[in-house]
Image (cartoon, rainbow, N blue to C red; front, side, top):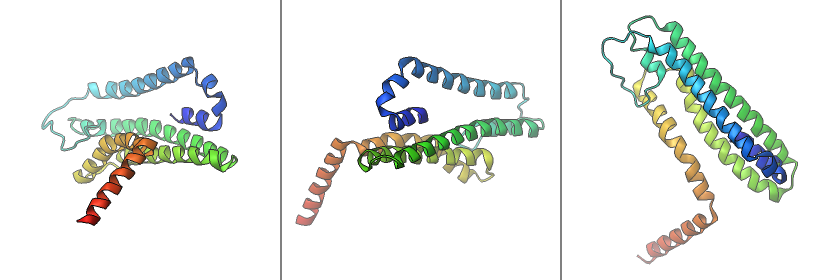
Length: 195
């Protein structure tokens, strides 16, 4: 997503050439390979664990660190490995995103106001979603909570709220939607004033 936004904002006239069908397929395959490698490596660590006792997790977010705690053996090293694995993957993604956004902000800063206004609007929406995605994700792995209420709040925020943000943001940025909201609000205000 960051590369796509970078090309769209920093090299808009070359977008179709740079973001060709072949490049998109490579990005798709790369994301699938990284995701499958990450998941498989963590599952390999977990499959051989002996599980006993209560198999109940009081959490909405049934992630690997919580499942590992159910094992009947010392899992400190494994927990550390999982956290480092997930933490490094998240940190590398976040750093690459921040670098690409910094480059885009500098590029926007050097262009005219009319062109930079729309690009800055798009970029600010992306930065908001990325921050709200990585914030809870990093806090879940970096600071495992003993309090189930905090864990549940972060897991609901990470799993439900963040994925809803992109559709909401882009719906509210749509000109037709803005006009419909303006019409609806003026009708409600008009009817409220007459009562």
